[in-house]
Length: 553
Image (tube, rainbow, N blue to C red; front, side, top):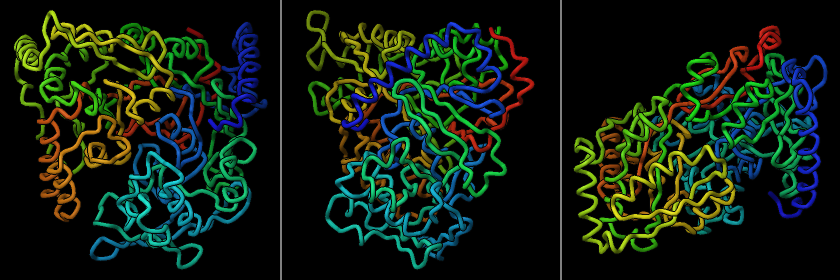
């Protein structure tokens, strides 16, 4: 959050918490009727459990999916996602590509910002130069490196005017790429490519992304943000497709304590919740199977190891940590949510990818893996009388988030590693790992678009999301070669070779491939399972009769 709002936000949060406690003493019927937090009678309200507290609602500073969930309801890129998570026209109503695949021309629909100003191609040019400006310090600036000269602009080697994007007129945007990208239509739905209202940003600076100043071109507008309590959006009457938007008001709640969120959903205070508590999965299957949303998604959970700190710069130590982690026990006995053990970084079912890369020890029995890991640790100078003391940071302070780390901690004890689990608030956690202030950190990455580069690029030298500071010139070179390859099959082969290099280096510790693992009441319609677990509220409707008839559990 912005420093100038900390004191005021604290006061708001205290007041909100007090009011929330008083409201909790009531019978809970108001939420079931759909009036929600501050809603008016007759309004259709969706109450969303949304993971963590957002750190920002500025699309150029957004980093996590819980922020994207909110911003994506207020701002729309050239393309957007339909209910099934597939790319569909957004701010652009059509486009065409040059024969060599390097130049794309997007034609904007005639639509407005929420303050009535016209959305122009110039807003996109301004936005992309802004996110790439080194002064913006966007963690996602690298995402635009596909655009001609983007990396040079972001590193200050070229001015923003040299970026490969132009606006010949108010409704035409011409984008020149560094290399062909057949996935560009999906790529352009990502939050980092969103436009921002130039007339507002230039007038208000950083304050533009707060309630009372926020202007977007999407289906909803920001009306309230009470830090650590809720964010409220209301339907944007100027949205070009407002007639087909069924939900009038959305209230996003930070719900990192999944057990507490389940209680709120059972009480009728939440209609959806982003993640479920794994320890409750058996009870949920028996008692609330109709709310479970479990489907494969393109997300890999992993541990990142800081290779700038000893002894994690030693490949033997990284290999030992990988060997000792019992992925089958984690997925089958701890999680029990149908996740798949991860022996690679790129998840299964990624488009145009052979999926042949993997750890060589996959077929080795776990007992043999542990024996091999112990041997490697002894070679690195550790043993029963000289144990490795390490810190293991995770991004939650909720008790139900300790099960996986505690299991992993126990597995590592067998190989002379004593990991001290340190729980952090989400924003603190990401600040620490981005700055390299950690030894081992738990993380997860969900696909921004359906292509293996979205995962492999995280291991490039210099990428802000390369938390472990992995470096291998051969790996980077193969990614560059793949980017120049037009043949999709050959491109996929090169990318798989690059992944195998990273896995052979034990660049990170993949643990499992996610399923969606959320909770959604059956009366919430249009909430479709999809590979990126993206759910834009413009496609959602509420069966109010079914909601009213839903008993508290």
